[in-house]
Amino acid sequence: MIFALTGTPGTGKTSVARMLSDIYDVRSVKEIAEENDCIIDVEDDSLVIDIDSLSEIVRQFRQLDIVIEGHLSHLLSPDVVIVLRCNPKVLKERLLNRNWSEEKIRENLEAEVLDVILVESIEEVDRVYEIDTTDRSVEDVAKIVVEIIEFEKRGIEAKNFKPGSVDWISVLGDEVDDFLRI
Ligand SMILES: Nc1ncnc2c1ncn2[C@@H]1O[C@H](COP(=O)(O)OP(=O)(O)O)[C@@H](O)[C@H]1O
Image 1 (cartoon, rainbow, N blue to C red):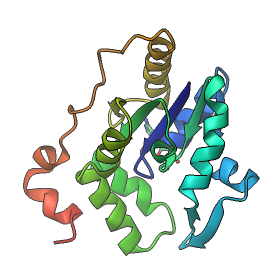
Image 2 (cartoon, rainbow, N blue to C red):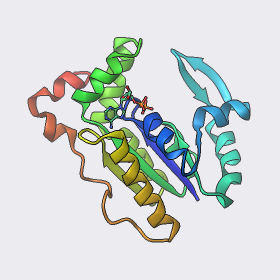
Image 3 (cartoon, helix red, strand yellow):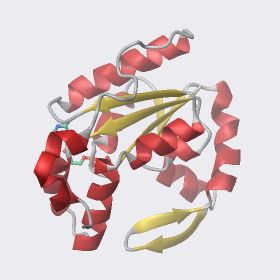
């Protein structure tokens, strides 16, 4: 089975994937794209990837149990998608530590507020989970991901962490304008 670990940049995919790599075969979208010559371009330190070719390649992994980490992983025809979420106020602090342009940070915060990756995942795949990482340690998030994977490997839907629990617009209230290009 192919498990996609996705989410807006800064939500903790790399950190959680590092913990999972002791248990599962974990690959990043970036490394699979590099190994298979699927990188079209690099724009503002983001990769432009040939998603169709990469999806074809990823299909070969279906016989294995593999976790693919990256904010495009949900677009590679996985069996299950796990979306990490993070309160935009916390996410903003994390992204400010990257030498990204203000515009790029705002775009990513806007995407998190508007559930962009969750919506894309639901459009792509039936089995989608959503974990709010805001007040959880990396270890706790990794434990939840393992629980979901182990349930799904047995053909059982993990009842907790189904999409719909996160609503940043309500949480942010009047502050939401600060995170949207208004
Ligand atoms: N659950 C968490 N609690 C506290 N800090 C976290 C958590 N997850 C990630 N971080 C921190 O947030 C930053 C971004 O994490 P990272 O794993 O690089 O995110 P992504 O791979 O989604 O871009 C890192 O500094 C990391 O240490």
